[in-house]
Image (cartoon, rainbow, N blue to C red; front, side, top):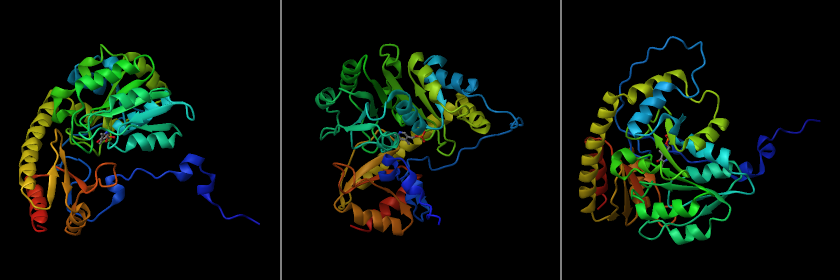
Length: 356
Ligand SMILES: *Cc1c(COP(=O)(O)O)cnc(C)c1O
């Protein structure tokens, strides 16, 4: 007699109990104004004319690596390209963390994938809450370093929008020297390039920086991200990366996006988004259901409402999809709003004003 097949019972123990990352797409919704994934609201235009799809792509396409190195002002040996910054987060754990022994550290409220990736690999998580102003709790980080191999620090932080203080970052880099990598997630750095720590790479061999084409470069659908680090760290990551992480079309489009012309276009997008963000913040601050609009250096803003759930549902019903952050520690009644087009932002403001 055959047993009914139960795939879930065959899964690894930590996979049985884990909840997958609830990406904006998985959460669904039936909207025409998508402001829940920090995407750019307008599709860019790219040419694609590769014929040699019978051949495997390069593992690390030279044009993409060289263009990104020039853009980031680092050496090509300090750059790794892969399937989005999310894959970088995972590669680092796969390469540096021994399950059941080593730990990763991060500072909630922050980006959710550090936790999901650690859980997937059965690696311990040390969650060091940020201070009330969302600065790093440097002392608590120091006290929990013992078996920590990776410290993920998101700057500007998603979803709060704040920059991590340079002095705190240097302190963490110093205390982690020789024992842990400090991974600064700069997914939104194009919106505030003056705060990048890429120029510190020469000084700190344990510094790793994550970048992406998904945000300011308007290419979330491309799945292309970068890791910047010392050549030694890049070498280790190249041991565990998939043989062909980028498809040929992805590599072609990424190389184009990183040509000087593509970078100019990105910069003009950033200007528009920044103007729209300032206008949205000003408009929201005056509304009675808004308790606080947090300052942001990014393409989103975090807003605390008197009743976040009510605002979320009311806008959802009108096809305006925001991101609910109220389950994160310290973020009760908070929603994250991606900066859309002017028309989209006006719809947000009008829909919220109607609740006042
Ligand atoms: C969007 C985002 C990522 C993921 O970027 P991809 O390159 O699309 O995988 C990583 N970190 C943060 C903080 C993000 O907001």
